[in-house]
Image (cartoon, rainbow, N blue to C red; front, side, top):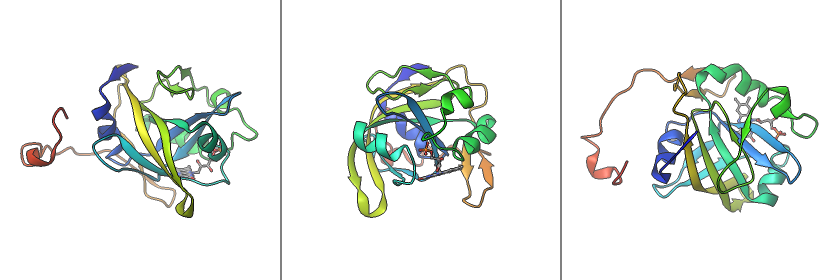
Length: 180
Ligand SMILES: Cc1cc2nc3c(=O)[nH]c(=O)nc-3n(C[C@H](O)[C@H](O)[C@H](O)COP(=O)(O)O)c2cc1C
């Protein structure tokens, strides 16, 4: 993984991919699948939505840290499988042969093989809707990832892969922050 500038975090999350959220509970790493995420600004704030029925909720609340790991479509089956079992009774890193890499700013790990990983600190929790407000602290991109197409959940058990790409950068210039 190659560390890249913080502004790049948005470019991995803005397309709305399914992500893997890694946490560390003080003893072991865990990972869950999340499709309910959203960028909030150009300053590295993101929202993710989950609740106490998931094991990850506890470590997220307690450690106030996580890593948003963005897998490519080549991980589609594994991403769904990870979201079907709980860290409460399963070591998912072992079960799904995931390689944890050390992060720079948080104790939760990066996941080797993902397209990108965004280390985050929990800034706020909004209990009414189970919304965690995250601040990106460090961003990593995987230069050796062959397939960078992202995976998108429809919500009914079907998924889309990234398809055609359009470049409207010139048209959007006035709305894009410098450096992106
Ligand atoms: C494609 C997919 C998307 C999911 N998205 C979310 C989500 O956005 N929020 C959520 O709370 N759970 C979501 N889940 C469910 C959790 O990943 C699942 O409950 C998981 O087992 C939680 O793991 P944990 O108990 O180890 O934290 C999703 C599952 C799948 C398969």
